[in-house]
Length: 230
Length: 226
Image (tube, rainbow over all chains, first blue to last red; front, top):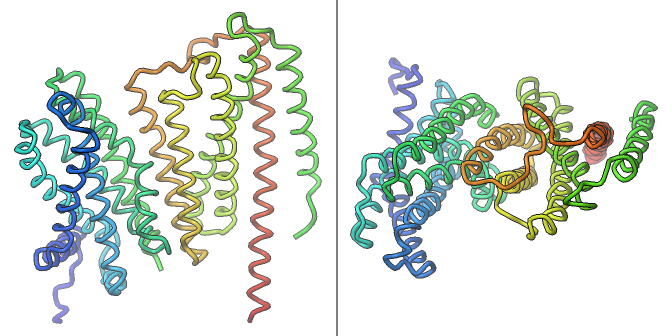
C-alpha cells in the first residue's frame, strides 16, 4: 500500500473494478461455466418444448436466442452482486475514495462482458446445431444493443435485490417487467435480420433499443448513489 | 395525530356526491350508443379508472424523485399511497375493459398494446411491493422503493411504444384533433374524469394519513421496547 497514486478519475476506477471482476472470473470460471451450461440447457429445453423442426425454427429462432440470453444473464447479474455482499467486499468498495458511479459502471461492464462471452459461444453452437447462419453484422449489433440495455437496468436492480431477504427470487421479478421493451425490440430486430426483412422495418426497433440504452444508463448513473449510500 | 381534518371530510362528501352524479349522468344524460348499446356506458368509468391509475403511478414517481432529493419520510408515505391507489384503479380499468371487450371484441382479452402495457404496469408495481417487503431497514427500503418507482415508471412509455409497433385494435376515442363523441357523451366523460380525480385526491389523502399513523405507531413501539 503505497497510497501515493490514488485512483481518482471515474474511468480509471471503473476500469479497475471491471478488471477485478474479470480477473476473479478468469481464475475461478464459476460464473461463466454456470451461465453457459444453463444457456445450453435452455436451448435444449426449447428444442423439445417447441419441437424445433426446420419449418418452425426460422420463425422462433430469435425468440429462443433472446430468452436464453436473458435467463443466463439473470444468473450472472444475481451472482455478481451477491459475491460482493457475502464476503463484505461491497463495504470495501464503498470505502474506496472513488466516485460511487464507478462501482456501477465497473460492475455493468463486467456483467456485459460475461453476457457477451456467453452469446459469443452460444452463437456458433446454435448455428451448427440448427444449421442457420447467425453471423450477420446487423444481428451482432442487435445483440450488443440489447445486452447493453439489459445489463444497464439489471446491474442497477441487482444491487437493490441483493440487499433484500428474498434476493435470488426478487431480481427476475423486478427486472423482467422493466426490461420488457428490450426483449420485444431485440427479438423483433433479430427476427428481421434472420428473416431478411428490408432495413426500414428493422431500423425502428434498433432506434428503440438505442433510446432505451441511453435513458436507462443515464437514470442508473443518476440514482446509483442512493442505492449504495449508507 | 389529530382526528380527520375537516377539509378531508368535505372532500370525502364531495367525491361521493360527484361519483353519484357521474353515475346519474352516465345512465340518465349520456345518449345510448347506436351500435354498442348499453355496454358502451362502461367507457366513462373505464377510462376514468385508468386515468386515476396512471395518475397514481405518476405521482409515485414524482414523490420518489422528491424523496431521493430531500430524504423526508413524508414523500415515501405519499409514494406508497399513490402506488397502492394506482394498482387498485388499474385493476378496475382492466376488469371493466374486459366486460366491454367480451361483447364488442368477442373475447375477454387480447394482446393489444394498451392492455399489455397496463398489465406490465401492474406487474411492475406488484414487484414494487415485493421489493418493499423484502427490505427491513426503513431508510433503505424507502430509497430503493423510490428508485424502483422512477425506473418502473420510465419504462412504461417504452413498453407501450414497443408493443404498439404490433397492430392495435383498441379504439382511440380521443385523438389530438377531435373526440369521436357526441357533445352529451363528451360532457359525461369529462365529468367522470373530474369525479374520479377528486376521488383520487381524497383516497390519497386518507392513505397518506394511514401511512403516517402506522409510522407513528412504529415509533411508539420502539420507545416502549427501549
